[in-house]
Image (tube, rainbow, N blue to C red; front, side, top):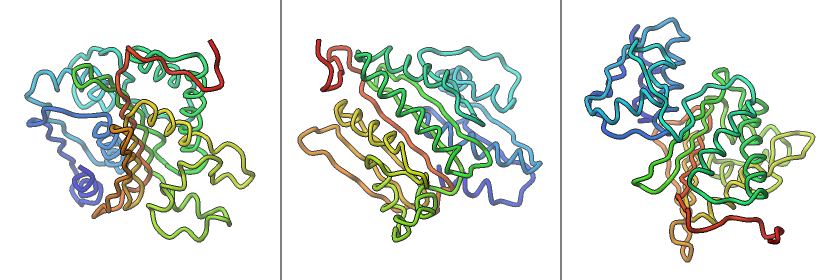
Length: 272
C-alpha cells in the first residue's frame, strides 16, 4: 500500500485512478494513507477517479466512514456507521474529536473516569504534536472503527510531515539519533518531546501503557522505520521492526485495542 501510494504521488500522470474494485477489507490505516495520497494529488491540480469496491459490505463501509464524501469522488449518498470516527482531516486540534474517539472506546471497553481522562490527555497530545512538530502541510488525518467480529478497535492518526527522527533531532540532546527506529522507540518513552522548552511528552507513553494492559498492539511508522509493540501474549510481549523499501513522509500511528466488556480498566492510583 505504501509503495503504491508513493508511486501515485510521484508519477507524472495527470489523473490518479483509485481502483478498489477488488478490495474486500480496509482498515483505518489504509483509509488515512489513501486520504493523504489523494489529497496531495488533488492539491497539485491533478484529478482523482474512484472505482468503488464490488463487495457490498466494503462499499457501504467506505461510504459510512465518509471516504466518498470526503473527496467528492462520488455523488452517491452515504450513511454514518456506528460506532466509528469518520475520516477527518484536521488543520488544528479538535477536542470534540477526542471525545468522539473516547466514545468509540467506551462503547466496547469499561473504563474508569481516571483512565478516560488519561487517554483523553494522551490523544490530545498525540494530535497536538502533529501541529507543533510535524510541519505537515496537509494537517492530520484521523479515523477509527470498531470491528465486533474481529473483537477489536482500530484507531489511526497520520500526518505527512517531516517524521519523528527529523523532529527529535531539532533538539540538541537528540542530535545523536541515527535511525528512524531509534527515533520511534525513543518517542514512546515518558518525557521525550521535541519541544525545546520541555514539558509534556506523555502522550505515546500513556497510550503504550494502556495498549499493554489491554493486550493490544501499537504500530508506529515513520521514515523507513516501522515498529510494532505486540502485547497479545502478556507473558511474551514482542517488539517487531521492519525496514520499509520506501520512506513514509511523515508519521502514522495505529492502535489495535481489544474489545473487552468483561474487564474494567482503572488507574493504580484509583480506589473504589
